[in-house]
Length: 209
Length: 283
Image (cartoon, rainbow over all chains, first blue to last red; front, side, top):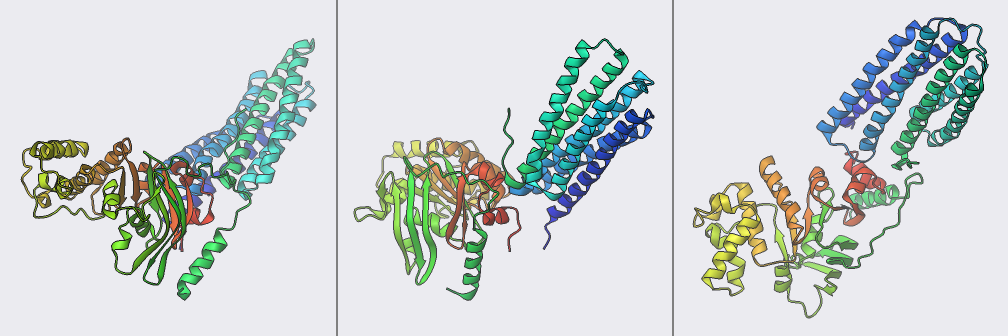
C-alpha cells in the first residue's frame, strides 16, 4: 500500500527531473549561442523557470518534513533534494551568466573559441552524468564526476595564466575567462550533485576537502 | 512456532542480510561502564518464547528508547530489566541483566530491592486512588519503613518539584491523586517512582494516554531526569524516540535488530528491516 508520503516524494522526483532536463538545455543553449554568435534570449526564461522550480522543491520538502517527519532514506532523499535542486538552479543561473557575457561583449566572431567550447563539452558531459546518476541513482557514475571536475578546474587555471600573459585581443581573452569561470562553477555543482546521489543511496556524507 | 511467526521470522532473516552499499561501522560500545547490561536474555510466557538472545548495554545517564511493532517484545524486555516479568504466572527468564556489573537475577539479589533501584512508570497513570497526592508520593518510602514526618514532607516537596508538579498542587496536597488530570497523574507517578531514590527509571509508553501538551511536559522531564538517572523508555511513537532518546533500540519478533545512536538510527539505519519499519514500509 503506498504511503501518504510517497505521493510527495514522487512529485519531488518529477520536479527534479524537469529541472534536470531544463538545466541541461539552458547550458547547451548558452554555449551554442556563444559558439554561433547568436543571442541566448531563451536562456533567461529557462533560468527563471529553474528558479521557480527550485522554490517549489524547497517548499514541498519543508511541507513534507512538517507533515510526515520523514526518517532514514526518506529524510536523506529530502536533504539531497535541496542540494540537487540548488545545483540545477545554479546550472541555469550560470547559463544565464554565459548568455550575459555575449550581451556585454557584443560581437565575438573573431575570437578563437575552441578552448572554451572544448571545456564546455566536458562540463556538459558532467551535467549529463549528474542528471543520469540522479535519475538512475547510479552511485558508480556519480563517483566518476569529481575526476572530470579536476580536468575542468585545470583548464580554467591554465586559461587564467595564459590570459595574464596575453597581448592579444582583451575582449576575446576576458570573455573566454569569464565563461570558463562559469563552466568551472557548473562543474563544481555537478560534483556536489554526484555526492548527493551517493548520499541518498548509501547514507555516506561527502568528505569536506 | 506458529506458521505465521515462522514466515515472519524467515522474513527477518531475509531482510537482515547485509546490504552491500550501506556502510557497516563497527559497534564501538561493548558495555564497559554500562549501568545496565543485558546479556543473552531469553524470556518466556509458559512455552511461548517472547525474547531471543538479547544483548544490550545501556549507558548511564542517557535515555535509551525501545521501539518496534506491537508484540515485538519491547514491554517484556523492559519488565525483565527490574524483575517484573517474573510476576506473571508461568513467565520465566534466562540470561543476565547486570546492574553496575551485578546480575539482578543472581542468587543473592532481593527482587524488591532491585525494583527500588530500578523504578518503573507505566503506560496508564496509576496513582493510588484512595490516597492523597502527598501520600501517593511517599507511598514507597512508607512501605520501606520511613515514618519521620519531616523527612516525608521534604520528600513530597522535593519529588513534586522534580517533576514540575509542586506549583500546580502545593495548595491541595490532601486532594486525591485520582482527581488530577491525566498528565498530572503521570507526573505524580514519576514523582512516586523517584521518591524511593532509584538509579534507573523504566518508562513503558508513559505518554500513550496523554494529550500533546501533557506529552511535551513528560518529554521535557525525561530530558532533565537523565542528569541524575538512567532512563529506558518503551514507545510506539517513533518521533518521541527521536525527540527524547540518546540511543534507540529496534526490536522485531522478540529479537534485537538494531541498536545505535538515535540520530544515526533514524538517518542511516544499518539494517534494512529497521529502515522499512521506521519509514512505514512495513508489512
